[in-house]
Image 1: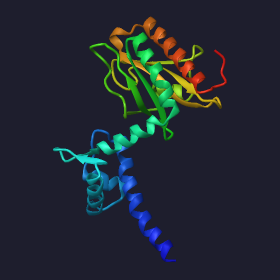
Image 2: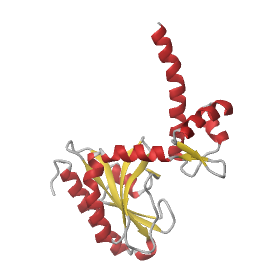
Image 3: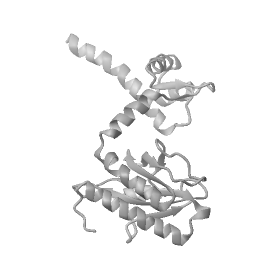
Image 4: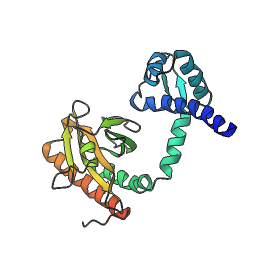
Length: 226
């Protein structure tokens, strides 16, 4: 009985701490104490105590603007987890090739929940003007190229192309990645400024993305034909 009581007393605070951390998935630009307390149904005093513990272990940090953001410990854990993911390891060299061949940034994304895609890797191009850093960012599944790709809603050519879906004046082409069970486990895409990507160029980028996604899928053991 005592052991069960101890377990119950321990689980409550752990769940509250985890709930606080999950809030940062959709608020990468920072969250206030008031917002965190409201999102987790905690009193400001309780939220403050838990946040101090997370700060102590560098899971979060508080900036001069008094907003909370994820800290370096979360990044280290995330990178450790990614390094053990076969998808991440296998896709990396193909992303490098894709960025080199396309002249635009190449990315790897995985499904997060049911409605978002999380960017977990990026290889930047040599262009002076780029679409920015996307690692750690999430985008909606709906109305995005990578979201459509990760849902398998691709064109006959094997890719999806979108313009101005997430940000104005940005174009993207994406293709799904399959595993050994022929299940989509992620997607890769190219993102670049629209002004230098014509319709013809976007179609070419789409073909490149589809080809590299196919090669990654084969490396993962997907039973698909070229």
